[in-house]
Image (cartoon, rainbow, N blue to C red; front, side):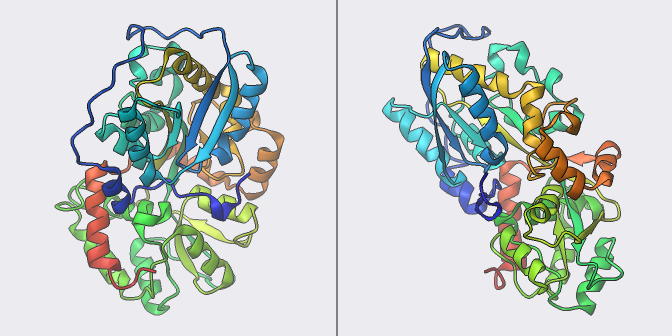
Length: 404
């Protein structure tokens, strides 16, 4: 399993989208593989090699599933060639392969960033068009996960899911009365300058989730429009900014400061609360509280298939995705709470997970998370263009002089 600090953020950054070409004209679609849309391609009967890029840090959750498939179906896939790549590089890499008609990547694991960039450039195979009953979103997902899944528009399968957060995390040895609302968080920051911290949203899932939740909590006019509908949000974040020393360039840096005692209070998410404590990066006794008027802002990881694959590799890729979406394999994605809960498929419970995952989550999980997921509204992240706008405004008005 990857070390916690080495897991790349799956988030959508302003520079990432610009580098990926979002907003550019879509590349001409390649010719489809040689079978009719609306039918699931059949396996060739010969094992194939499949290339896989992880651009979401997801192999920490699914590597064991790839290993299990390889062991069980050596007659279908002889080898998975696994690699990792930063999200900003993925779309340009795939587009170059497609233009050269030499595609050696069969599946890409993406977050919302590379997913959206590939949609803009028309890079991904329309998986929904095959009408595969094993990959029917109505069968796979509950309501909250279905909303997150719909961001793929049928051009990817959501394989892991989390309602995410945000929560307020604090050190109980240093904070006897933790802030439980945005106003209390601001009051604490005023009374304790430089003791509150959150990362730059463009570089951090926590920073991004916190930023996107504020307009819902404050009742802004349009939480989906950071340019015209976030007047309360920007005013609040500008005021909070007065009492924040700097903004780390990533979540791991914030966690280190919190663990070292430099900072007392920070936003967090379910996965970033559970997993660092399980790995010993953050003290086990760290606590979290929901924010008053709390709503979840969700996140997910997807598998996409580049357009233009030969039928045998496409069929094998789809067969693997079907395997990954079975309840048994979905249960593996509980992992050590990294993307809690992890499974995208509905009905997959912790009791189905490997015993090692159950032990970690019994010790480091929080039962009230599961209750909140049943009762709390879950909002989807911003679409790509509003997200870029939110990052730009935050950088200009909030973090311009304080980001490290």
